[in-house]
Image 1: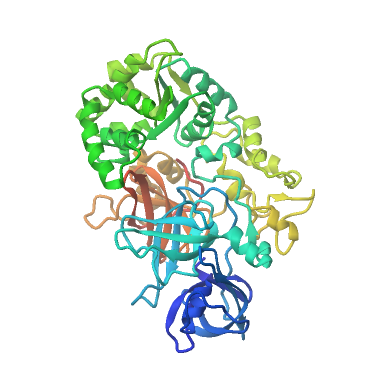
Image 2: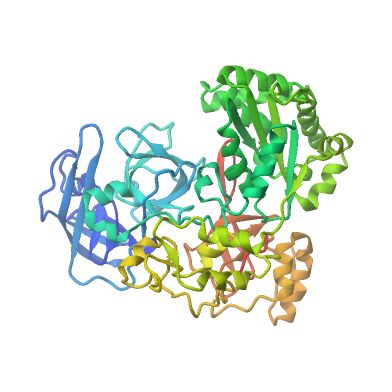
Amino acid sequence: MDRALARVRSPQGEVVGSGFLVDSHHVVTCTHVVLRAAGRADHDTVGMGDAVAVDFPLAAPDVLLRAEAEVSHPLEDEGGGDITVLSLTGELPPGLDPPRLIVADDVWGHPFRAFGFPRRFDQGVWAAGVLRAPQGTGWVQMEGGASGYSVEAGFSGGAVWDDELAGVVGMTVAADARPDLRTAFLIPSATLMRAWPRLVERTLLPCPYRGLYPFRSSDTALFFGREDVTDRLVREALRRPLLAVAGPSGSGKSSVVFAGVVPRLGREPRWMSVSMRPAQASSPLFALAAALIPVLEPELGETERLSAANALVTVLRDGHLSDVVDRVLARAQLDHLLLVVDQMEELFAREQDEVQSFTRALLSAARSGQQPPGSRSLTILLTLRVDFLSNALQDPGLAEALEDSVITIGQMRQEQLRTVIEGPLPSGIRYEAGLVERILGDVGDGSGSAPPAQLPADHAQAAASSEPGRSSRGDDPTARANPCASDAGSEGNGGVEQAPAPDEPPVTTAEFQALADPDSAADLGEAADQDGGSRTDPDSENAPPAATVRSGFQLDPGQDVFAYVHGAWHPAIVASRDRRTVVVDYQLNPGPLGARRQRVTIDRVRLGEPGA
């Protein structure tokens, strides 16, 4: 997106807002940005041919271009409108590249980033946060993160990049001016497309593959290959108070629960669900309390919820989770609650007293829920890495409760992988002949492979086309139908085995295994030395934090990667790099107070498939 971001100036050179390149000679921005450049009121009308000055600060900051209004929709009294398409005149600088636009109906909770020019920051700053849902005007609400810059005046007209969908989902249009709020709004890509139909050529449906992101409840229509496990979990959840799904890292435990079990049980009469993770807050009990408060006291504001969660921790510690559940169900006028404790292994990194207080709270509610299935009010569903099952069984009470209640999930069989690859394709889209077999052949039996949903998204380059035998590449009009297509064909890219970037050393087997198993990270330095490289001594005072980036592409600033940091994979953005080091920003798992970002420096970069 960096090479498309535009800075809009008045004829006198004053920075008034943002815009972004949408094709070889057009920039989209807000109508009120163009009007402010002319010193006019926001609700005036832009005349065809009205001009502003535009440059591209992250790609060609020294080249100022004239841009004339070609299409303009004025800002409407009740919101809406406020879209202008500018035609660039003169020769454009090299290196500009319009991003793909994504049309998506549901972006709730997706992380976003945006670039803008608030007062005193004419060189621009980045803001990040999460997306919400459309409001009455059709604008989508954006919530800024707890720290960093917020979206404010000067961001209007800029592209909003959805990290999860990997594309531009809209254009920033307004921000709430109240100092206690970090809320802004975007015009979605579908509205931009209606305002200027030529954008259809640059607009894609969201890629139906989730890549390395876990599936959520809203992804149930795209979730394939685990129907048998889902059916069994649903049957057991209907008759047991406590249930666990265990499997190796990356096997899809969370996806089965959130895209399979939760939607299925949600269709049962008078069911609801709540989910939490032990590491989402300062203590596992506080994370549980923070998950319950929004359904227990839905009228509370954010600050009030924090105080209420603190009080609720004491109630839970005293063994009254079942009473809290009964109150939640009474308020919701429902009969049954599914409590999902995702990534239960996080619990065992805590102090022993925290582990015991949390398990006691769960077990007290599970024991009180051992009534006939029709009268029980609570089912607890855990997801647990299989290598932590022994930790869970060290607690006698938890071991007893899990007896006959653990369902295992392993790597997928070939027929399941085929369903994963072919099932999510939109109607009328198919893979090139033989490509599915190539992917399956590269994966083999799935042992030690990356999550299956990543394979079509990241490696089946130009995988689908709307006609048999036609690839979706270049200027082929069918390319728009394939949301996962790239500019490369399916041949010559190494299939599932993505080749390293040209200037990076190869990945050795020992290094790959060390990344897949954080406990073997001590072997990584020795493997690197055999490879002819060097590594900072991990015991040195100057050593960077333990983090390793894995990616199938050349690492450039602004590129999305996944960083393996402190025992988990995190979506990350390359901040800077040279031949020896790379700095990435990665997002910690969001908790009750929102997502946090942290910057780490890595002394060696390895490219290839994620191993965990």
